[in-house]
Image (cartoon, rainbow, N blue to C red; front, side, top):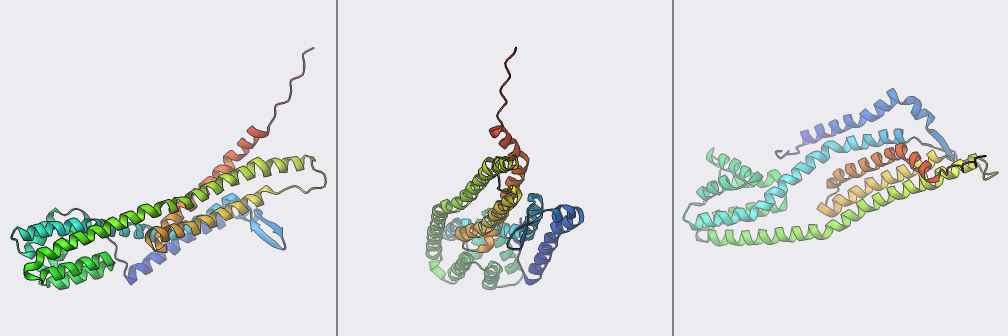
Length: 315
């Protein structure tokens, strides 16, 4: 997928698309699930009311997922595009230094190396050289390349290329130094990601653990307790509305997924926007888990707590 430059107009379009998608679940809820919505509103005490239906809460959470989906897709593909460029910078400088060392002029060396450089970096260098052939100076083409992406690694690379093109007989030394520098920076970045990755998985595992605890609490404790109270095993105690507790746990898990996903993005890439994709993954996991609990939870409860009646002795 090509890099999507987020200009002001495209950001506005992205916001409008997100707002439009976010309206679809509430619209469906009001048109087709209105009775379910009204019947699921229950009091929880202190003049407070809440939605107790897992289905209704799931539809509301889908609105958040749809709102985050467009930007998360664009941001994820752009980040992959930039990461591919950054990964190939050090080999690009090495190949460029070897071409100049072999006697090729700097501009021709860039053309030769761009043809064999894989991925987005080779494509971007080819576009840059086309601008030069159309009359732009190499420095202005390089500066526009840096301004297009605006990330530190590409700005450093452009500074190195401009310095190398103006350094005369020291071109090879500049390029060799740049290749070594970018190689060290890339190795440091890979090591940092490796060390930070366990902290991201801790957030994922904590939400998974919360879902398991919720399942046990609902279907191994609250549901049987509600049945026993309803059967008169505990006189004077009002029956428990399990759906309210289920909704509370559902909303709590959704809040953990939302803020946990943002935290994962901040930890891994240093920006909250990268966490939108993790929010979508975690929220989807929570929604699917609670809806599966609705289907299979009662079966598990009956399988665990149903004791077959003893058979009467034959006469």
